[in-house]
Structures are given as structure tokens and as C-alpha cells.
Length: 450
Image 1 (cartoon, rainbow, N blue to C red):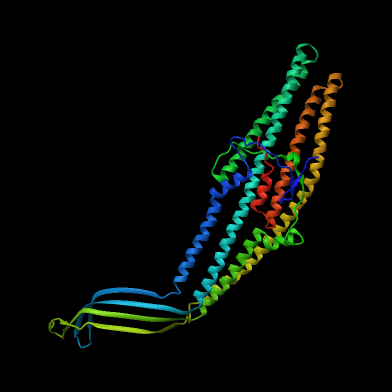
Image 2 (cartoon, helix red, strand yellow):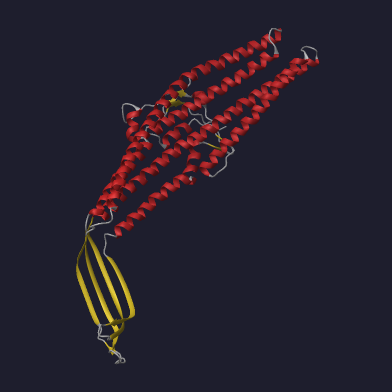
């Protein structure tokens, strides 16, 4: 009896020990290449770094703010007595301030904390989305390769039959029409191989988009030992309950709702006063002045004593009226919050639909696998019977060719159902927030390296 190992994905398998094909890539290697080279994931990582710098900038506003300046200039005062006083000089000053209370600043800090959490969750969602994308691209390529494999096998089978028919025709055993029928089927099978090869190459281009690397092909999976087991939710009674909390799409929407709430509080903080300490030191030097009386000439420049000014105190700012701008910002933030709630509900409905659809797909594929396996056996038996009938003269070459195509078509449908089940199982775990790298490794353990 064949032994079957169950894996965390919910698919049972037996792992074969085989050699790696030159130029091939398995699912785990493809995932590692994507981790290292995927632009979307790197962008999400840079977003975390960016919000970290924003935190540093905001933290700086809670610390003392110190400015220094140096000035040099001239000034003229004209009095009603027509006396003019000219003065010039230089000064150096240092001004320091410290926030004691600033509600806008406090709310900005809370909003930034929410944004940092959003960035972290966005990165995790990007990682899980990448895991699903890698699996999907890998399995899509595998399906294309399986289709090419069956198309090529069908071509060789028809080619062999064409050779036999030509030999029989040369011996006068079959009519010329049989040769033409076989040749036509061979030509059609050739075009099928051409298009199947094109599909493989396009699927491989999809892998390049993920990793920036080119591959010859993906490692095939040992589908013969595959047992289909539909995954069960681990955090709740069913996948829908679990997805409401842990689904990547819902996690993003929950964060967006939280950010919208913080935006309301930030806008409302615009009505609040701010309080801070202020201090200034100024030193005036190289100063001089000159007085010019009415109708007279200047009396000459007089040097002024250097002087020092020191001020320290508390300053409060109260926004009394801003033309309605602050109130409008509050209303805008409130509307944005309601909008985020509606988007959250829409996302939940979409996730629910996707979960139900995926569960239906899994159930259908599990049943279809059994039917396809029987279809392969039936098609193979039918081919043998048709070939025997052809030998006896009761069946035509067209019947044989059609039976041959049915065999390879049934095999292709079986492999596609098995691959689609793997992908649907991964998608269900993704929708429920359970997809991990371990699931990809579990699928990768099926890889046949020949």
C-alpha cells in the first residue's frame, strides 16, 4: 500500500526523493527569489522605514526648539517735529521654546502610531499576497506544462498511428482516405503543441514579473500520490468567522477605519489652545545713532552702549476664528470615517463571497478528481477496444484518433483539477488569514525533480 503524509495545507502526499532538473525552479526557490527581488514587497518595507522617520520628526517637536540669529541693519525715525534719528547696529539672539500642551501635536502622535501599525500590517498583507501570487504563478505555469506534456504525448501517438496507416496504405490494406484523416489529425495536434508551448512561455514570463529572473520551467509535482483534503479553519468555527478578523483585506480595512477616527480627533484638536514656554536672549553691539534737527545737519554719529535683553515666560495661543476652516475639516473627517465604514462592509461582502466560492470550488474539484480518474481509465479502455475494432474492420481510423485524443484530454483534465484544488486550498487559507510559508513548503514537498 502506498503511504500518504498529510501536510498543513490540508493535502495528503507522499514525497519522492529525486534529482533537480537543470534550469528548473521549485515553489520554495521561487518564493525565496520573490522575497529578495519583489518590488511591491520592498516598497511596503520602505513604507515602514518612512513612517519611522516621521516618528523621529514628530518626537522632535516635543523637545525644546532652539533658534539663533544674527542681524545687522540701519533704521531711520522721522518725528512730527521734523527731527530725524538714524541708527545702525548689529545684534545676536537665541530663542528657545518648549511645548507644554498642544492637542494637535498629541493627536498627530496618536495618528502616526496608527499609521505605523498600518504600515506593519500592510507589509504583512503584502507578504501573504506575495505568497499566494507566487503559488498561483507557479501552479499556472505547471498547468501550462502539463497541458504541453499531454499535447506532445497526443502528437507522438497520432504520429505513430500515421506512420502505421501509411505503411498499411502502401500495402493496400487501407484506403487513401484513412491516410488523409490521420494526416489532418496530426496537423491539428501539431498546432495544439505550438499553442501549448506558447502558453508555457507566457506563464514563465509571469514568474519573471515576480522575481526579475528568467526560468526554463518549474519543477513538476507528483500528483499521482495526491489526496484532496479541504482545509479547516483553526481560529473559529468556520472560515467566514475567522476571515472577519484575520483576513488580509479585512485587516487593511480595519486599519483604515481606525485612521479615519484619528483624523476626526486631529481635526477637532484645531479648536484647542496651545501652551508653551518661551525664552529669548539678545545681545546688541556695534550700535550708533545720529540726530538731524529740523532744517539742520547731522550732529555726528554717537556710539551706543552694548546691551543685553533676556526674556522668559509662558505663551498661550487660542485659535479664535479661522474662517470656518477647522469646523470644515472636522466635517470632512467625519464623512471620510463614514466612507471607510462603507468600504469595510463592501470588502467584507467580497471576502465572504470569495470564501463561499472557494469552498464550493474545493468541494467540486474533490468530486471531479474521482470522476476524472475514472474517465482516464474509461478512455484508455475505450482506446484499446477501438484499436481492436479497427483491426477487425468494425471501427474507422477516425474513431481511433478520437479515442486517442480522449485519453490525453482526460489526463489533462485530471491534472488540472488536482492543481486547481491545491491553488483553491491555498486561496482559502489566504482569505482566512492563515497562509504561511509553511504551506508553500508543504506543496513544494510534492515536487518531482527528475
